[in-house]
Length: 469
Image (cartoon, rainbow, N blue to C red; front, top):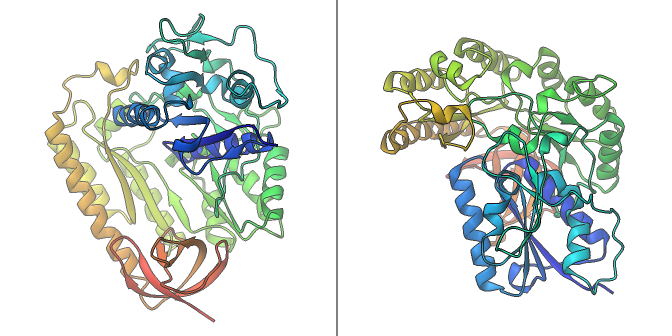
């Protein structure tokens, strides 16, 4: 009989979502029960992001809310914020334990052994006697051994993330009841963009060995999933660190041979790593989702150099133009940062001009956020918040116009979609191969079905469609 309940709250990117799904599956494998809300849970795991100051604030607010609404719960904080500043999180009222990314594989055994003593469940791993340690906001990766966080009573399990040399699958990635399971095939990043804290909390690039990827894919397909999403922190670097060298294109080719696979989608890929071979696979294989996400960050070469981004605006323009030519119906998205230190109105205008002329279909626009220990914090002058907000509004307005034009171009045209389930109002929702939100109205459609639909109209952020017989 189960002797404990758990609830997981995820923040951040797809890689973090995949981590959360793996933790959930690991709890379930030990016969714990997933609670629908944190109010009724014995253990609440807060899986954090730290890419911006806002992400940190959201995590702290959530921790305090959980403790306020369920004071008996054991709150376990993990993820990137937990790796960057474990002692800071350990000081928050209600936090029982902080588990950095360095020890995330041991999170479930830690919880079972220390916070669910009546569960009588097997602990599958023994803890390194030097596991308990803390890090300051210095993101150099160094750490010192210490006991529980000083004065807080919270346990801290965290060590240098750069000690991680391999990526292992910590659990079945199909957890979370997803229609489109996210499979993390790569973690960490060996680039050192001047604004980014992620390499210091995720470590250097590590790839899941091909055999394990294929095993996970086979398992997900045998469970009946139609679409799988490959994700990673630096997905385009897949395979470079493996003893038997590989690359993302080679992995994709092997996965596409699986007869049960119906759709494979790729998450973000850096511009210099989106090779012609990958582009051709997306263009030519009916199993590949027609979707590219290619980070830009800035359209001004001066800012790109300060960011330590290894390409030029001109290179990026030629790349996305090639994508549109090779895959005319593809969604093409980008991450764009505004307000990077020293950014001037002229730099912003260069970014706006590039995006105005490029065949983009959506943008993720976000303001620069100073992260402790990153080189960009030393750059002067910092851009006033008001200026960054104005530039953000301008780019988001441009993105909305381009996205609407893209959606309208599919009116009275067929699309391939995967059904996601019902909204609260009873309408069936789906996602198209080219990343459009599709409302199927009151059509009785089961989740996880690949369908052909006819686009009939536009909503505020998607399209409406009818299922073709």
